[in-house]
Length: 206
Image (cartoon, rainbow, N blue to C red; front, top):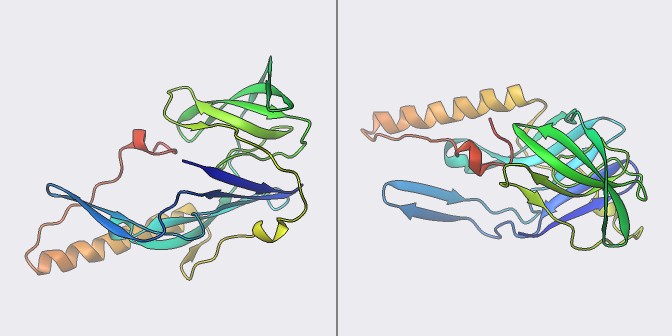
């Protein structure tokens, strides 16, 4: 899967280039999976000055709806190591930090003094070019870097009609939408169960 990170000194937008371009339904036995499209690539916007991350995600029964969620930037306690290596033409230093249930080995470069990186990772003295979880489940690997001033129009928060200013608001709304769907199904005599994705299949473990 390819990702793209647009950044300047204070803001960044991370997008999934391989996000589905159209919705689809996948059936495996009695299990139904709904694939949701997003032509913006489910962007993740970080504002270092305001200390916020604003990102597009899914909500509701079978996670069929899209919404935007605003949260404080994660506070990752990084341990900076003496280990160094070159990634592309940049000299990087290694750091280890725990984020949402996983421990990451990250490589950052002070040659680009921007405290950002792929996904929601941030908080180091330079741009994170690579990061891999120690359980081997998640990897962000460097492909190339292009420095230009022509992409500031891409570094903007995502927009959706449905927005939440905290994870608590989002969780409450998600539970209410799921409960409404279950009650409607029960009234029709249909037994429906909603399963959360297995934690090991997610970037953020619960």
